[in-house]
Amino acid sequence: GESVGLHLPTLSVQEGDNSIINCAYSNSASDYFIWYKQESGKGPQFIIDIRSNMDKRQGQRVTVLLNKTVKHLSLQIAATQPGDSAVYFCAENMMNYGGATNKLIFGTGTLLAVQP
Amino acid sequence: EAQVTQNPRYLITVTGKKLTVTCSQNMNHEYMSWYRQDPGLGLRQIYYSMNVEVTDKGDVPEGYKVSRKEKRNFPLILESPSPNQTSLYFCASSLSGVQETQYFGPGTRLLVL
Picture 1: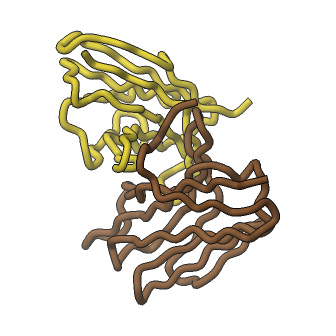
Picture 2: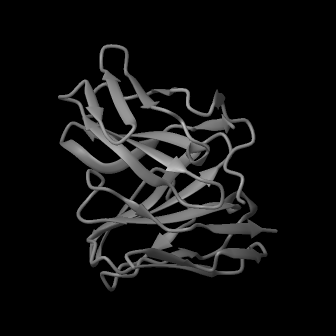
């Protein structure tokens, strides 16, 4: 498969444990955030999003937490499975003085390795 | 099946030889975008298009061109490729913008010698 990063931060968890992946974003005015999952050899896949007027949003086995005070985003995966092994990226929708732009700024990613 | 397709998937070329990477989506999406992915840098946006004949620069547009003559297609053109354009390229589309779910293509691995 394709290698998307040679020196990615890596989180190694046991199957069945909960995983927490963290992301620091850059623009305090950003109002929309997304988590993507990228499996080896594939393009990124949308997982969950959150707007800045929320602190928490839950999906199926995933929860995103947003702390605007410290510009921090986290993705929690419950009962991690081998199929969750992938690189996870956060992304923010850049804002400017005119409001939301049509640009996304991506983080550099975290490799989640699930041990059976 | 709803999808974004890219061609070619792999390409080796030489400096200065013009090339085009095609991108096509079958979801009637208005928004399309190109990204490049490099180790340690994540994905960076090259160009995007809000609709037919409407394109705009992303964060790293230098050395690239795009066109949007039809809604479904958004080709990426490298008029004179250089080695620093060696990268993994992704096309993506969404219904109307970045605050809608973006669907990514499978990627094009480009090596410029």
